[in-house]
Length: 133
Image (tube, rainbow, N blue to C red; front, side, top):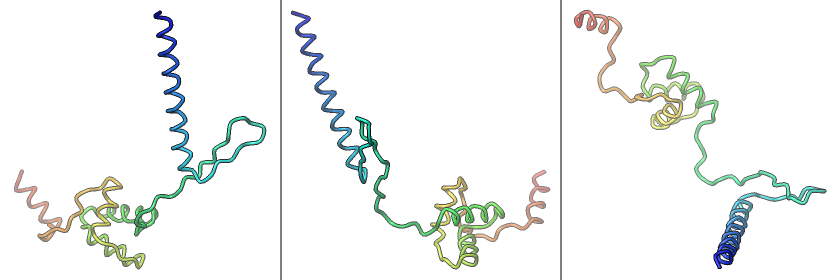
């Protein structure tokens, strides 16, 4: 009697697995532009040409992103607004300071916010360091 139940359970599980597999394949292949059957092979060869997702077009290219990160790394005291102005002078494209901040964050740089006070000059910093010592 137990063998009969085990066989039924196995049959049900295999049926569920088959249905799940069919559903997964159906969902996966519906995202592809097309499927091509290869010659002489029983399995279809799937061409990976996935549709592009919709959304807003980026205002900068990857090369421009690298330029923004590089210009911020050259002078660590520049603000995001100053980097945006440098980018405008170099490329002729206007981008916001928020865009610059996002690109820098993507490159691993943080805290490029506009400063309210005037940045300290080198002599101010050395005098402050001397005072601390």
